[in-house]
Image (cartoon, rainbow, N blue to C red; front, side, top):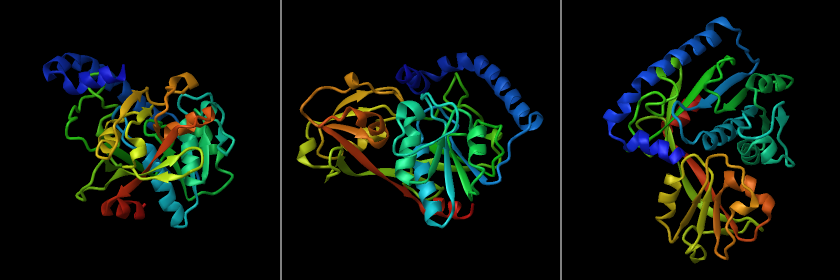
Length: 316
């Protein structure tokens, strides 16, 4: 379904989309009233720690979780005390739960486990961000980073870092449902904007690149162009796998694709029974590792920030 919606937003003739503008107008009125009430009428929770909200304005992937991992590690390596809050999206978590090595993605969410494994810092998951922030207040942190928390106005925040995917082929700037935009930029006048999938240095930004392929059983590392992956199958459940596919196709890899919706909770029957290698992202392996399959290989990525992004983060 999401592929159909994205096709309509970005491929349909613009005059057909304009027919939906009245609905976008109603949507704008609703979200404006909601924001006004949450910001100006109801009380907002203010943490004793500085809150950094990482989010995006558009529907679809923009690299929020990889960026949150990089940001957390950067600040931690700079001597700051860091904690991370995740929503546990599409999991069963309700009350705040601290992630550890025994956490299960179905219970606390795939992103929260990945955040913990890649940062080795305090990560809390729940479906209530205010409650999760209060849960962390017993320990004084320099920063509490909320992965994907932009629209949660019940939280007072010191910093908003909004990611925009740099994609010249996708230029629909309409609000939902006419386009993919959840909120206008005017809702966030003090935010810092960061371009993802961006390799220049005119604006703060970053891109991700594949580095190695890791065997799930013993951790052995392989080069991306190893002949072992000549007939691999890529299995993903992420918001947008197009950039990943484009990069893989530059190496010595002949891919078949099996694509599931973002945050899909895999069952064992979802994974094809084949002799060839199955490639998965680190985020998806969090859910697949319990199946203990012999031919699963994990794509390792590195986030590359530009100079302006590093300078921006140093100024927080």
